[in-house]
Length: 282
Image 1: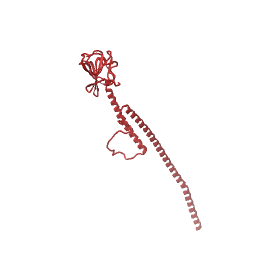
Image 2: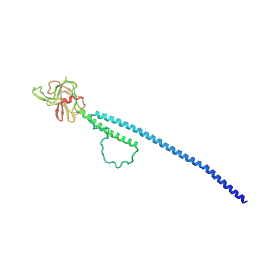
Image 3: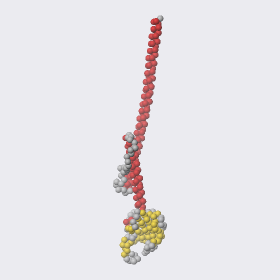
Image 4: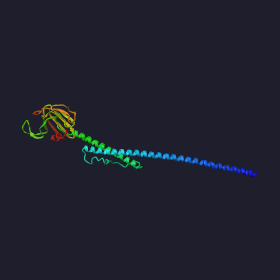
């Protein structure tokens, strides 16, 4: 009887051990599979991160190349505009940033970006600096253009020849030596008289002192021009005129021996030889 009971206990223990062994053998591959799945998921995440990094790197590299090309184009444009404006060497150097100043940026970020991002930031700064220089250069060129439009240049008549120059001459009415304050252009009556620079008409009418029908234009920067002995004035006091605009018709009004234009240039209130301006291209 006892032997039978012992045999039964041993059988149960043996069965339990076999079951545990089988359970352990079947559970171990499941954990390995789960671990393998996790590793594969992590591998996929790592590869996705690598792809994203490569894409961002390529995008940054492409942006860097585009900005470098823009810098090159701006440098070439700046040098060309500087040459066109007739500026001296050193006034605008597009290879160097413009002179700036100010206090330290104590609140600025302290983090140093990666090398590629830092290079892009540097190029962006260069582009901003060149944009500032181009804005200043545009302003300088515009100012010079306005100044050039306001400075007398060219002939004040559509046709005609110089019949008397600036300086000492014999007065045609008295025969005595006299000082001629302008240049005379002889041409048929009604020949067009034109403005030699942009400005505002400060006189348009019959002027005392022998000028006859005269136009006076103030051009700014100290320049004034006069057009005298006209047959008819075609502008009014206060009108703004452009270079080359017809302002009068030639005649012989006032103290004149025949149809001609008496042309004067005054600089800061003093008459100067108009020939120095007539010789300039209009």
